[in-house]
Length: 478
Image 1 (tube, helix red, strand yellow):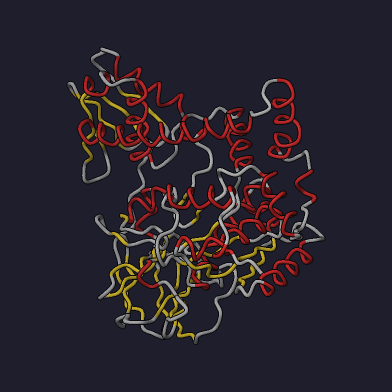
Image 2: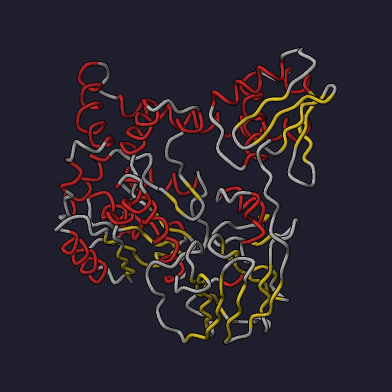
């Protein structure tokens, strides 16, 4: 029998290996978990990564499968993935999510609810397998479909950059590979896979693009339209990355941020910038002060006002107020904001123990837990989290947020200010003092309750002892 090590690589394998190296998706000794849905693309990805692992120097830590509970065949898909993992001697982590219920509760589409559930599960499963990243089977066709979806919705360069080869701890080694080539690869190996009938549902925008728009473009305009669209997405990504870097550099010279979160800039410094940079700088400063997303129309309105020579300027924007003081533009809190922030607080939390936080209307508990498997559904955004008990100092401190606070959010790979966590999570400025923060004397902040968990207390297979930290409303159970 000819083994992979004793034969030359196929063109497909060489292309995937080039993507892994060119985008630095894996390094020597990386441990990679593979998202396996049971469909053709994910089965092909798993097979390819198993073969390429010894060549590229990484290890396949196992596969991960999320049962979305949306289809009658979902149980059969899960069984297929379990059996395939066993036949390939790979560990498997399986999760379950009621995506339809999440869609209803969060008032989002089924597609968006599934997306969020998947990536939350990937993070939990990656930890359980001791993996550094999760590989997904997005292909060149997925890239082309995403480009078209965002184009018709009016996205700019960042949106048109499509699917990136890496997003945090998720990697996508097949972005250079057309979907049909993966089917051919599986057929040559006699490898079976599952068909997802929901991919034919034309009520879903992506499916209409896949089954109607792209075939039309291929037949009437260019047979290679998928390649063209994927190439344009890559160009947009590289352009957007450069523009963002240039905007960050420009903003550091133009914008001054005050300790309280307000900002100011000299009118002429922004007005003299090219439109592409001025828009990005304006968007950064408006969103930083307002703690909310600002659209292009508001950005252009802001730039128009900055360039206006009128001596007086006092205008409300979403979440902030823009005024002129001499030759400077000051971006501050909105006129209507009158509520005073809650007073600061600090309490001890013994292990095991419970403490009431009346300022937050919550009670926090700490319980010890053995090395049991982590339950499904817990994320850093949950009201209960599991943390490693190793080297924690008792008692823990539960306190209010202080300016300058920071932590190392799980999966980020670096430090982040708690203020920026609040901004990303759209926590209103007046509510930030009510969010409990759990800190440890030696490790600093370990949990911003309901929003972020520190990498320092991540539970790993080697963790010795765990704690369950839980928050509940005072006078209730959730």
